[in-house]
Length: 483
Ligand code: BG6
Image 1 (cartoon, protein in one colour):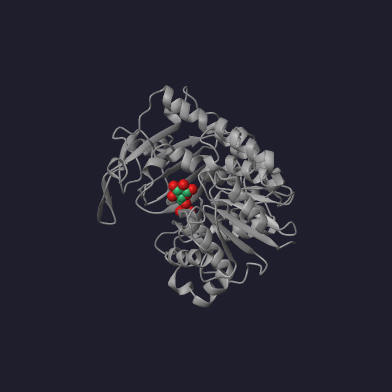
Image 2 (cartoon, rainbow, N blue to C red; image 1 turned 90 degrees about the horizontal axis):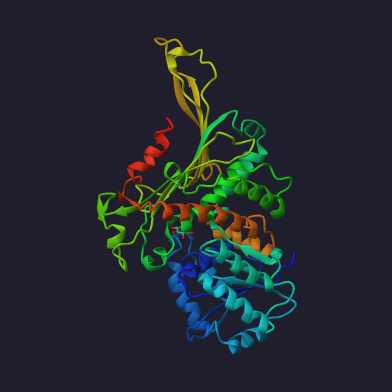
């Protein structure tokens, strides 16, 4: 493994870098996982020298690190890796200047923590100024495009300069510990996989709920909405990991092949079926944890008082293949929900014949909690301990608590895993081009259907679980959202 790596960050003074990327690197430094030979080149427009940059960065990064995990000595050692370069993204001279600092004996990893509109121009400029050699890698943050055509265009430009094996498309959900554990749960536990299909499973629920609202990014978010921001990428990845066939190896290629098959098997939602399959909502003012919070239209930066952008989506999806025929996947994701919760529920079918007539027909549920309280619990049916009732039944949980059962004191952030994997050249937790494009194909059809049918957003109060229609979506099938 070649750890002689230069991590080169475009957008080094941006929000993502301060909130996620540099704190992740700091944590890797602190647990001695960042190879000594890794250098960090930070690029931004500001006129600073390396010392000034590091001082500024320290101030920003510290806000995102738990004081318990902060050490000045660790920061000092970390800061030594930095080299700051002023770079105007459009100015070829700045790139030439950067090229002088790069060495062919080291691997350059270009990390695009920039708006996606810059991916193409930056690649072209890198190409024209001798910054690239065969071993270079590029890391792309979402969103890659805002529909199939634009993602195709971005992927095409990047492919002119980097081969697919050197392109690392980040979906940070894949770096979350519990998402990786989903692969282990499914493919390292034999009994789970034998029950993982339409013969045993009634339906699947995926909930990705956030308490936050739009938080200062109104003008960006308003052009995107929850479907593009969360479903096209994070939710689709979760759905693929739940639904895919076992890959034959833990390689990027094998995993991607299986995920793509699921995306292709997703039943299209179009104008003919959209009203029964999807609900869109927008939060109005409400209450969260006893505090009044504004509605989407009252958020700072609101520029369009008639905005029809959705901040909540609920979808009933179907995967048309042998394993999942007749098993609906209910998805809901939204901002300003009552709690932060990312959870997958596998709801098993009821018994074909119930001999415990006193206890009712309780079904099993496997609940995979991605955040918070990362863990897995299996709702089992067990005997009610009682002399009075002879065979009463009660629901009990078999619990796997990831943090409690490990020696770790904190669950690492997704970016720690992903940055480490880019350094080590392991693409298994990154997204392939075909996946992105298939996912856009499906989302585009849904978005078009909303437009054709003029399906406007339904209001929901901040602090609630979305519009009443989202409950109806599942309840009309005789089911309910978990909890
Ligand atoms: C990002 C979205 O990709 O994921 C944000 O753009 C969202 O809108 C965030 O808030 C959620 O990530 P996490 O890790 O907090 O669940």
